[in-house]
Length: 399
Image (cartoon, rainbow, N blue to C red; front, top):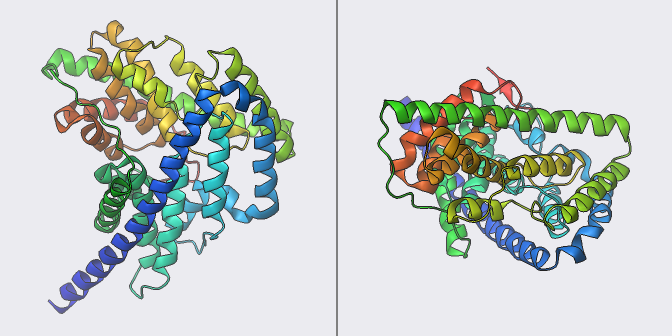
C-alpha cells in the first residue's frame, strides 16, 4: 500500500511538471506555427522573388550548423537516443537553431514539414525539466512528454501526440509509463497554442459509408498502397541522404546544390506548387480543388531532395499532403468516396513512414471525426503491415 502511494505521488509529480512543460512547448509552438504560416503566405504571394535564393539559404543553414550546431544537427536521431536514456544530452542551442533554420527553409521555398521543430523543442524542454525532478526515470519520461507537447501543440491533436511519443522511439513497443505524462503535456500544449491563436486543421466527413465487408476490403487495399508509398518515402530519403553525402562531402555545397535543384524545379513545376508544407494540396484534396495524378509523387520528390540536402523542418506534414493527394487519385480506382480515401491517405502514409500505428489512427479521429476512426484504423493497420523496415526516424529501435 505504501509502495502504491509512492508510485501515485511519483506519477502525479511527473504529470504536473509535464503540464508545465506543455504550456511552454505550446507557447513556442504557437509562435513558431503562426510565424511559419505568415512566411509561407509571403512566399506564395511572390514565389519568383524568393525561390532563386534557396541555394544561398541552404548554404547559410548548413554553415551555421557546421559552425555552431555541434550535436544539434542530429535532430530527431539525438532525441530518440536521449529517449532511451543513454546519457545523451540535448544542447539548448538546438531550439533557436532549428526554429530559425526551418523558417528560412520555408520562406525561400524548400519542401519540408514542421513537426521536427516542435518535437525537438519539446524534447529539449522536457529533458531539461527532468534534471530538476528527483524521481526515477524523470528525464526519459519528461523528454517523451516534451515530444508529445511539441506535436500536440503544433497540430492540436493531443491524444495522437501522446501515443506518438510513447510508440515512436521503439517499433512494436508502447511505453505505457510515458502515456499519462505525455497526455498531460500534450493537452496543456494544445490548449496553450489554441489560446494563442494557432488554429487546428480539421475536416468533418459527412455521410460516411457503412463499413461492411466490401468497404473494409477496399480500405485495406488503400492501406496497402499507402503503406508502400510511406515506405518509398522513407527509403528514398535514406538513399538520397547517403548518395548526396557520398558525392558532395561538403555540407555547405551539398545544401546549395539541393537548393538549386529544388528552386529550379519548383519554378518550372506550377510555379512553387510543391514548396512549403503542402497544405495547399491538402486543402485541394478536401475542398474539391485541382489535384493532379502526379501531385503525390512530385511532393515526395521535392521533400526528399530538400531534406537530403540538409534543410531543416520535418516530414510529417508533407506526408499528410502526399497521402491526401494519393487518396484523391486512388479513390475512383478502388470505389471509395474521395474525402474518405484522402483522409485515410493523410493518416496511413504518415503511419507507414514513421512505423507507428496508434498515433496515425488517433489522428484519423481527432482531425476527421471519431466516426472515421474505424476506417482510419483499418487503413493504417493494413499500411503498417505492408510497410518495410525503413523509417523516417533512422534512430528508431526495433524491439
